[in-house]
Amino acid sequence: MKRYETIQINIIDVDFNLKDIEGKASDLGFKNISDFVREGLKLLMGFDEIFYKKMVRYSKSLNIPLFVVVQNFIIKRLAEDAAKTEIWGPSPVLLDEFVYRKTNNGEIRTTTGEELFNIFKEKYIKELIAERVQFLLEKERVFKLTDEEKKFMIKNQAGKVYVESEEYKKEIEKKSSIEQDLIDEGDLENNVAEWTSDVDE
Image 1 (cartoon, rainbow, N blue to C red):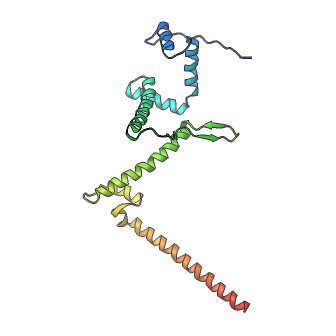
Image 2 (image 1 turned 45 degrees about the vertical axis):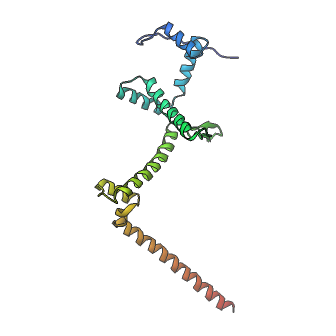
C-alpha cells in the first residue's frame, strides 16, 4: 500500500505565480501541479551534494539563475553531439558519462557525483597534457620556451629541453644501472647453471 505524505509550500520571492506553474506543468507534459512538483523534488533530491554546491557557486559568480547554469552545461554537450553527427554522420555513441558499477553491497548503480568528476578530470588531464606537449614540441622548433613551459616538458619527459636536462641524465643513469643489474644477474645465473652442470657430470 502506497504511503502518502503532504507538504505545503508558499510561493514567495519568485517571479511567477500559481497560474504560471500550471502553464509550465502543462507545457512540459505533466497532468497536474502535484506531478510537476514531485518531479522537481525528485530532481533536486537526486543531485549529488558537491555537484549542487558547484552549480550554486557558478550561479552566484556569474549572477545567473541556477537552472540556466545546469541547462546551458547540458545544451553545450548536446550541441557538440549534434555537430559531430552533422560532420561525421550518425554513428553509435558511447556515453561514457553513464557507467554502471557494482557497490560493496552488490548493488548496481550509475557512477556519478565526485567519483565521476574525478574519473573525467583524470582522463582530460592526460588528453590535455598530450595536447600541450604536442603544441610545445612544435613551438620549441622555432621559439624559445618560457621557464614554466620548460618545467612542464621536463616533468612530462618530452622535447629537446628534457633531453638536455639533468632529469634526463639521471633517468639514463638509472636505466643503465638497472640494465647492468640484469646483466650481472644473468651472468650469475649462467655461472650457477655451469657449476651445476659440472657437478652433475
